[in-house]
Image (cartoon, rainbow, N blue to C red):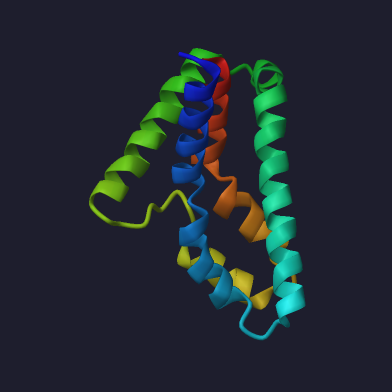
Length: 139
């Protein structure tokens, strides 16, 4: 697989799992009273936090799992099962429970700043995205 093919594969995989377009309705529901400038700041901060978490796990994930005593093949199996579950939910046009729950959306509406939690983590950089980044890095 060439670098261009792998880059397109990795981007499309992460884009589908992170699914930023599906987060937009929850973001709008959580920030109805905020000024557009504050909404833009929160969206940018959430993207930066999600990217930082994914890069952190991509770079230090093997070490983190080594400290916790989790082997990479075990994590790949668990991550693959999680991704299969998300894919099956997408196939049946259901929103995956691994993304966000109604409680998270309600908690987000009560918070003043939602950029880091729940928007950055777990809505954007959730378990599926972290699993995908680690599996892609091990390829």
